Image (cartoon, rainbow, N blue to C red; front, top):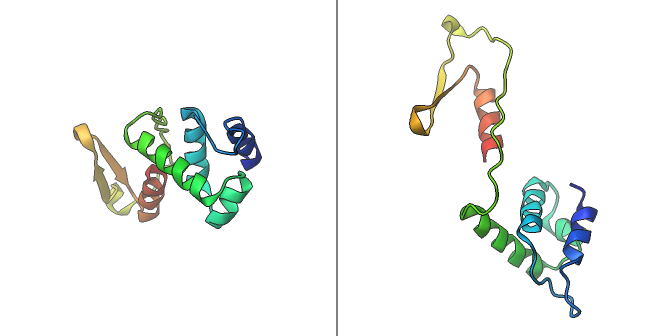
Length: 120
């Protein structure tokens, strides 16, 4: 999402005194996702959405708390099909055991690292 859209959404929650009041869960969720995807300097992020350091700290803290409590909808898991890779002996050497007896096999370390980055 473009930060200008997020800035406009946040501006609808500004009081006459300039405070952000009653920010909806949807906007907090979008803010958290935008923050997690930001690769630049933190100062540039909160300037691009028109908030101060104190405001962004409060909003992100609230959004992270809501995420921990499960108030945001879980993003769906997307299955990735990779072309057949010829591994040594014809089997994959890295196995990741998940809850409920589920097992994911990786043939290359790069695939495991990519999976872990996206899962975080």
